[in-house]
Length: 173
Image (cartoon, rainbow, N blue to C red; front, top):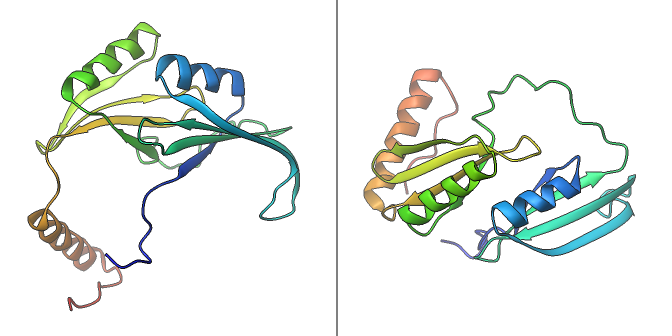
């Protein structure tokens, strides 16, 4: 890959409406560690005046899931019409046994879990919502994706584009 391709994910950020509940869920239930927090009265990237707390919870790999609690921001009362299964974050588990262990742990904490779902014999996944309504997928990938998977993926994308009349892909070099 070219040097301008991002190296890895640093963090993905989501809203929280109760930092205490978020903290307890990510530290006590999922075993993540709070590794940092930032409190500001203005957004550094925009200058917008909003008091917020930005928290970072580390995965074992070092990447983080992060949250913003913004003073005065109310939880939206209704969704935007996008099905709840579309927007989610998928986090890797190291083994099928670890996946089953965390599933039991979630259920012991009263979290409703869907799965274990087999995806094409490559991924085994469970799904649940965190206290903020964010859908989390925990998955074990049984094999790396290779050139055959990439070729099959491109063929499926090209087929979809042709059927739906979308912008075609550039020619293969």
